[in-house]
Image (tube, rainbow, N blue to C red; front, side):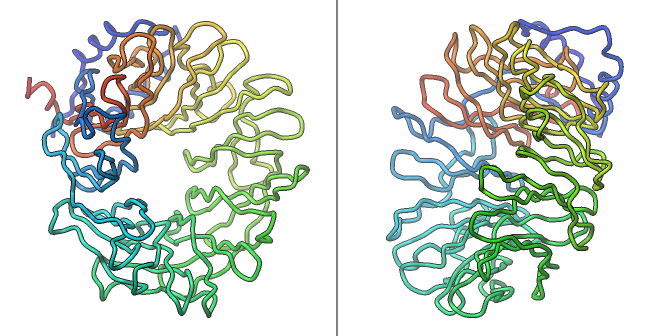
Length: 478
């Protein structure tokens, strides 16, 4: 496949950008941007997104949720006015977008949810009048969408939750009368769907959740057992090992984040004077504490280190990093000096740089970038001049590009994208013209498109699509 640098596209993007920030010191970030682009031959075909399908004409919109890439198809749930169902799309401006299968609602009236991609299929929880809420699977066809297994016979169901792909299988929590809510797994067949382990014998159950694949290849998750919340480590079979516990009442373990072979997480208490502790386990070894904070926000891995937003007793919420040691857990930069917080959020890695939203107290909340050092952490794009800020949200890295929403004067909150350079950071064509906002969210690539949900002010919130292709296919199809 030939590599393709979209020069004509870059010129078109520049022409459509009302505010293209410039900086004489672009060489390093342009180099990083080029590296990211060369690692991926994918590129957007222009900057005009199209309505994928008006699923619920004449209403407030179908409100698509849980947009999940499933092989060549996008899966999502939407309400066409007759109830929320599972839908699919092959993209291409609305062609091939359809309801997968009508599933009559069961006794609770709950819609399909908990979508999880496993290969070319999607697993999900759904209910019908006969079986209640159980595990279902779909390959995108009506005949290939069916109940996997009736785990708790009767009209109530086992209520599968926290569906998660691991080693080509779906792991989840589900209940039955004998074992309560425990850990199950499935390959999509009745015979291949079974309880992995009864961690607490009897009908009480442990309700596993927060499944996370560690860099060491293990499956980590949380359970509630014996009045404690516990962090568990498993190879996917029976014999899960407890690594950490805190009292289930008033305490927590959260934000499980793999970094290399390590797993970072936060422990703490709900009491007002309690601190949030940053802990790490290395390939299942006993966890150690490496930092203590007033509060901790987003966590993300980059270049073998953890980057996170946190506030300590001397500064408000700022950007921090950790190499897994106490000495190596340090603040990257005090973006908003003093006790006030810059509140970094939506931490997203693009190539070897970290993008996030922050407020330095002067430019308002804008898009920032960091290479992990204080000198390499700076305002990336001041999209809304002055102290108001554009408040970037929904930052999503997709094959060398950053997609996000931003709120600017005269345009409202609309979709934006960046190739990793300031000049290549531009708004897509407005979906809701004028000062109105389309409020785009949930960017995801599937096939040769980037999908997202947005409201253009006419159709309500519906799915939208931006062609996003590889190897020069944009030019070939013009």
